[in-house]
Image (tube, rainbow, N blue to C red; front, side):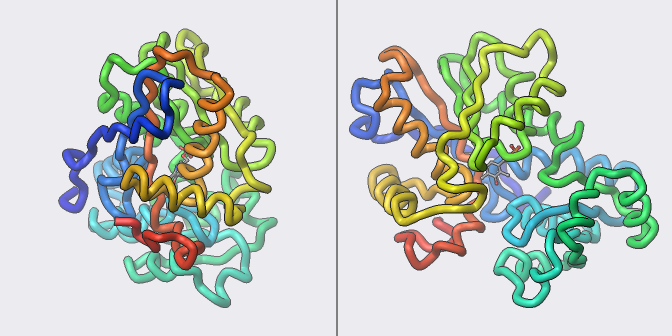
Length: 306
Ligand SMILES: *Cc1c(COP(=O)(O)O)cnc(C)c1O
């Protein structure tokens, strides 16, 4: 896809003053640089989905998300760029009254938005509901919420190709867990994989993870859900202050939903002496900067962060 350039991905060392002697190295894999909207892990989870849709003669794709969804924002742009139509099934009918900037951008990329009740939305993986949607929207290729399907996991596994062998710990944010699954399946098992869930009680994800992680790869990973700040999408001034300080120190804009909470958590783990001094840690910047618009007034780098 012409707009995407994986060659833009870099590994950026963080300022040593941030982690002092608590680890031997702490670097960031800048997947956010792939594209401002089709960024980070979203591109990886979508690439094989779009390929599949094109190869199988689909004219459009349909997917699911909330009013701030990084996934839908990425689907809208990537589908348009691939010459595919797109439909977004949006959680909550109230979201139609005043469109969030995310949904407005989806529409601007030609995505048809369909608002459903929270109750209907819970049926997002049920076959009868999907059949109903397929019939209603001209038989699109259906991508589950967050790109959480086999194509998504295969794409996420490709992120491992970007990770040099000398790292001992890989850190990633986890929403559906698709990225973590892809990485655990593809990375050598002796590399410790740490997942950071930004929602309350996020440890429920473990069930999904063990379902899709290959049995031989099913060890040496851990999921933290301690730094949710009240729940998914919730944040406070302490987090935006952390994001500003982080930006000024390293020149890296974090997203308020996932990577800010992950880096905050990693800071706490470093402080607690969780890592040994010889740990070489790679944190994945999974993108999502379009979502910062909800806190743009408080962030020194505004919305896009670039
Ligand atoms: C969607 C998203 C995630 C979560 O990825 P999963 O594969 O669903 O676990 C993490 N970070 C960012 C920035 C995201 O937008």
